[in-house]
Length: 256
Image 1 (tube, rainbow, N blue to C red):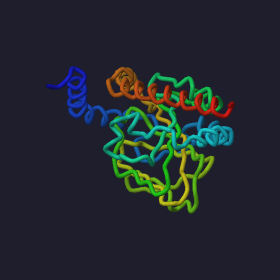
Image 2 (image 1 turned 90 degrees about the vertical axis):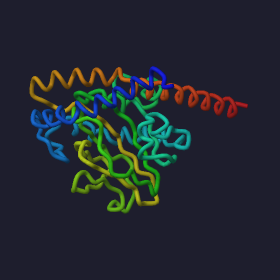
Image 3 (image 1 turned 135 degrees about the vertical axis):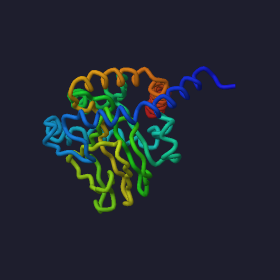
Image 4 (image 1 turned 30 degrees about the vertical axis):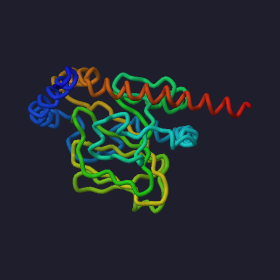
């Protein structure tokens, strides 16, 4: 017999499958920046600010990667990702997620947290870490009311072996360079190099005309209180507690 939470999740998914397609078509028509796979960075002036600070972000990332093996796998935080990845080669380091702020992670990466907080409509922000040989299969994002931003931070060579396809167009990341796209188009990503690839991964609210903007705000509010986000927050907090305990044990051992 299913639990109440399972019934809520099943009902939410079923409702979304019926309601989202017509809503997303309307959002696409109401978009102030168009509806296409990739977007010109100049359309979003804040991207220049992130690019100007990318070396500061990279410096904080380098410190985070000293504990790379202890960082959570994406599916350990968001169980929905298990349809795409089941190994330990896609790791994350969350700063923000739909109203949630990781105080400990933001304290370790204060400049990154500050720059992300300045992005208009920022909903999620984290380091997305792909191990050598990792391929994320073709998939689509859950909701057109947000858009996706990548800032290249650690991009291994050869660059042409590390990239992303959105719809029919393939692009490659570059360190210090922005990439903005609509993840509701089918997309896949890969790192066929021998090095680790890391981008700053941000979802932000799509600029929309009213009344679509008002409805989108209501949907995003509901998402923030959904079982999916609540479960991800709980899982992140559990990992954060274990991570802090590990660092305390390590510090105590070093002090002996």
